[in-house]
Amino acid sequence: MIPLRRAAHSLRRALSRKVSPDALKIGVSPRLFHPRPEGKGIQSKTLQYLEQSVAHWVMSRDVLVFMVPTVAKDSLIHPSNIRVADYARVLDGLVLQGGSDVSPLTYGEEPLNQAWAGDRLRDVYEIELVHEFVEAGKPVLGICRGAQLINVAFGGTLFQDVTTQIAEAQEHVTDDYEKHRHGIRFEPGSRLARLYRGVERPRVTSIHHQSVKALGRGLRVEAWSEPDGVVEAIRGSGKGYVFGVQWHPEFHYPGDGDSLDSAPILEEFLEAARGGA
Image (cartoon, rainbow, N blue to C red; front, side, top):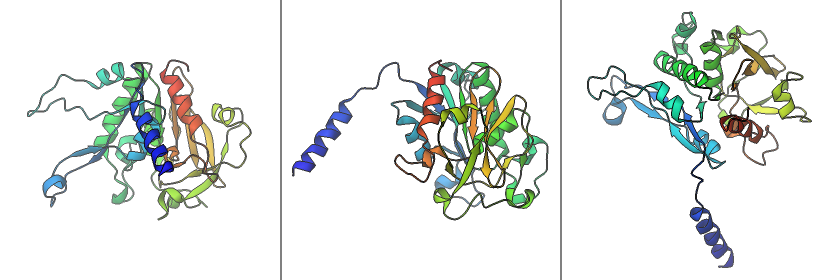
């Protein structure tokens, strides 16, 4: 009974804590589920949603998280004067979560396989989000697809499929999902290398089949996968904070000795949101 009472006391104490009124407000772009032709009920509707692990990872630092729904500028049903710029003005930072492929049409190519056609509607919306947050001087962090989207938003292109377009590529996605990992190497002297000073042979999750091809304007590479050299992290070289990682830091659990500690990345991003970077 004593351990149970202690657990109950700890829970009550945690629930009684109040988040500071000055807590950071971080927006997370939504994944989109488009209605299916044969769909019934909820599957006949457009859904916008967050992957739980992303939200909980950001919230682990007592940060308020808000999903940033798409803006229906020309809606005949529920017209609104809300603009994407309004979110960038009110929120302190933006996280682009993973999900569907970036459409090759978004960077001027045709899909080499219809399965890689991606989500053009989501691309257009997230690119507008990126530019509005950057224009507002607010930090942007991209995860997996989010890193790819950042590259495309700055004029870059992608490999549509790592396995078929990169010679001697290792596996970057398997049925093990978040349990699949591989090694990376940091660019010497980069901010990422300084952030993980002394870390040897870092390993990260790998759940993707697209990757950065031609680098976008004003971006630089900060990490590659080992041994095949696929781009694993990019950062904006201009004013403000723009950073993207190909891996999923939200799946790097505390105390997991097999994966890179995700806390420094989150803390760097939130420090930028506070105006410190």
